[in-house]
Image 1: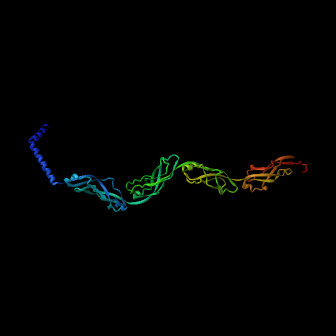
Image 2: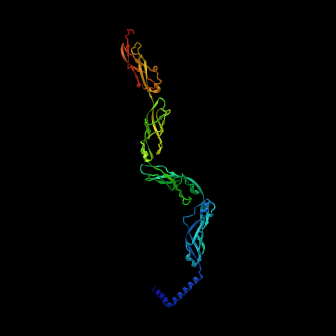
Image 3: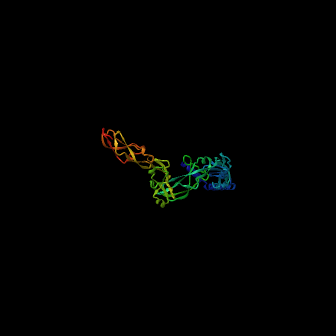
Amino acid sequence: MKKVLQFIWDTVRHNFWQKLVVFLFAFIIWSYILVDSNPVRRCEVNDITLAVMGTSELEAKHLIVTEGLLEEYSIDVDIEAEQNDHRFINSNNVTAHIDLSSINSDGEAVLSVNVETKYGIVKSVTPSEITVMAENIVERQVPVTYEYTGEPELGYHVFEPEFLNNTVTLKGAESVVRRVTEAKCMISIVGLKDTITKSWSTNLLNYSGNKVEYGSLIIGGAPSVSATVRVLPMREVEIAASLENTIIENIPEGYEVSEISVQPTSMQIAGDAELIESIEKLALEPISVKGLTGLQAINATVEELDGVSYLAPRTVTVVLEITEIELTKVFRGVPIEVRGNDDAVINQRIVDVTVTGPGSVVSQLEAKKLVIYADAANLSAGTYLVPLEIEKIEGIDMAKVRLSLSNADITIPAADEEI
């Protein structure tokens, strides 16, 4: 190895200056030839961004490209140009594009990649064609929905949003637009205590409630919606349900409402703070009990108040006890019968009877239907105070029947005694 190096050194050192002069002279001549002739040579420009043209013209045909257009295509171009121009050739002065305006129907389309360069001639393009899929553009209206997130300030109620428009119009690729069933906006109400009006963005959802990924296939993207979210102070107020403050109409004749109760017993209301604080109790609207008797559970409505919003339906359940009005009637001089002994002599032959009971029964009751008697069976000769009894009166609680006499004075004569 040492000998080889020594040989090279000896060769270079021998006539060194003559060799150097010859080399420089040859380099000068070669440079002159290159400059003077400026030969044509090839060069390659890589990673040229592909521009997409004709989008508006395609949209005017109610078409849109759904597949084949990547977010960024990388195009490689082979250019033949003079040697002196090579230093100017780069991705800034070489452009590549495809023209969508040549597509006239939905389906697959093959588009040529067009390249333009300021210097030289394009010899090859990679890729030279782009295959895309086009779809028809359709329009469709979908409902606007919402979901509140978070909680408002304690003691405040957030009402349903009032949208400026309850639907939005989507325009885009048919396969995407047809999948969208609602435009849902997520509205944060965290700590809210004042009414607000603003615009919210929407998410496009399918029938399963999942987001529809649409990219650029919905023209203009998901629309925003404007809405007013009303927020008011709230409190819970008792419902007043009593016989004194409830208007009950169409009570059947001869009947009265003896008991009343309501479920629920209170309701939440919202409104101006000063107004709702001034409300002590909530009254019921008039209740009709036409044709009803006995224990009844019916629907009733809490009264409507100006400036007050109920946070639940105003319908409540009222339980009523509708009973007959009791009448009291006195029957005077009702005869007393003696039973069980034909020889018995009664000293007091009549009695006054006081009957208390349902009006419909008492009002129809006649003295001749009252049977008062004393049982003298098994009594021997003598004088006795025999308890008076009364036969059962249909529809009357016998505990509420009173006699002016409790006992009858009865004499049983001896067998040989004449009456």
